[in-house]
Length: 216
Ligand code: GS8
Image (cartoon, rainbow, N blue to C red; front, side):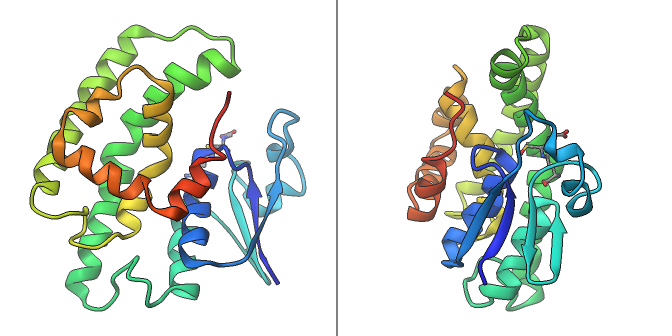
């Protein structure tokens, strides 16, 4: 039976789950949750995610929420040998854990705020971008990307020489940041970050999912 993903292919967090399913070649079905109609805040979705957010995953009797937890589950269940978590030695696994944590703790906040201010707010909520917030978050993102530039000058991917979930977790927001904001130079002006993005965005699994990630 195919795995069910409750969400929307255009959503950043749903995308995170779809990238892994495509990487692993796991059969899946997307069950749309109509956020405009508030379906995410109602039964039956609240039984899947009590916080009323997308995505959620159903695999047989198991129901899970939190996209970064779902990705790890999928690798452990369907892709032990994929190298996406490098659970071969404690040291290799720690490198993946460290950069996954950096994505959550350092990278996600500024880039998601920027994508919200520059794309979601004007497009969905007819709001006005707050330029002061944009300026402050761009400064924070720049500092994070300086650390990435230094790291990626030493290894091709964040956790070493092979692609892992640490890289994959970044894709959704970078995709929207580059396609829907005027600040692509933040990534393109840092040569190692640029090469890293080119490597991860050109993977067939990435390209297949990002083709469906658009709000236009
Ligand atoms: C965040 C989910 C989330 O913010 C995860 O799964 O990684 N930490 C969680 N989902 C957004 C859509 S962005 O893809 C959402 O459901 N927003 C509606 C809301 O919060 O009401």
